[in-house]
Length: 429
Ligand code: EPU
Image (cartoon, rainbow, N blue to C red):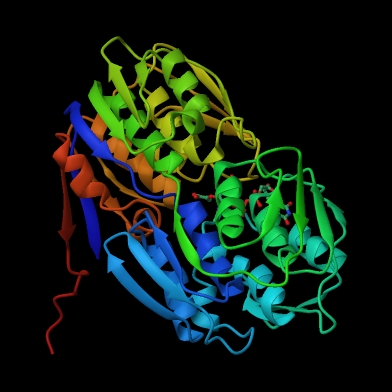
């Protein structure tokens, strides 16, 4: 029953070092299944989704060694088939990458339907399935499992994704790298983690071109080898600290970032009154003037990321006027609004559009992290608020933020983890 407790009202000063990108790591770990050699992966984020993904591979027979805090060696050669454990794979959304990787290696994969953050009733995977089927696999969903099979092997082809999907783009790349012939993906996602996965695979001997553009071309190769690869910095972790400074005021050097990946977040924070200086692999953010209102529409990369929407909506509660937010990726990503209302926020939600009334000083309350980025938004709300905020269900936050409490404490926040035992009724025996 660990909770985060924050006494709000402190500005943030100093330096924070950003970890590796979670959404790269959770795809690159399954990608090692395709490699006939040891993969040494550096800048691995220290977050629980990564631990789950590593444990899944370990239970399948991979040899995994931690070389230091952020470097892991994975040897997936001992894996003997495409079956995965039900309990672990259903814990995280990214377990669906095992499908593409296992299908690519064994021509057969069975993975439980993925879990992850809840953004509404369904998070469809029809585009992943469309991609596997186009490559020649038959796919069957039953009993809580997805089973994909291509006993004769996968054959390269042209696939046009009807929806821009990070997961489907990555999964088709994973399945196609060892397929026979050339695969062309039209309308792919262009996020930095797509390019990161392609770069990892190319270092291991694959031939993936065009990642980050409108067309990805994958020429199948006979095998991949081992090698060393360093994961890119996490753009959303960086953006979250930048949003926190915009909310509280202060002056922070955000280190180990690729400023280009943050362009859209930087532009929005500047509109909101922050001063931002881009350095080679760092960004300085200063906020001294009042927060200005703005409008936000989330879009696939290079548009404004949905994974920063809850954090900026929170900061906009204190802006000098109303802001309109339009969620362009997920059907339901406003579950956190009820929690913010407990802290005094005035936000109206109508379908995919939220209107955030500015001019609110949030006040501390007990709130829940309803999903990963919603949890980050609650942390920012707690830092901005008057009084004490207690955040429950922090396991969501730990899925994607390494040592968030330690990192914030070192830059001046009054934040701790408290361990409260569950309530026990005082009933006489
Ligand atoms: N979609 C379909 N069919 C599909 C796949 C997706 O209709 O087969 C729709 C989704 O319902 C959604 C849109 O396409 O409306 C985009 O979904 P996408 O597939 O891009 O999302 P994802 O791969 O499931 C990843 C990140 C999310 C992030 C989204 C969008 C990982 C593990 N997750 O999810 O990250 O919100 O891309 O950028 O990479 C997070 O880190 O907090 C997080 C939720």
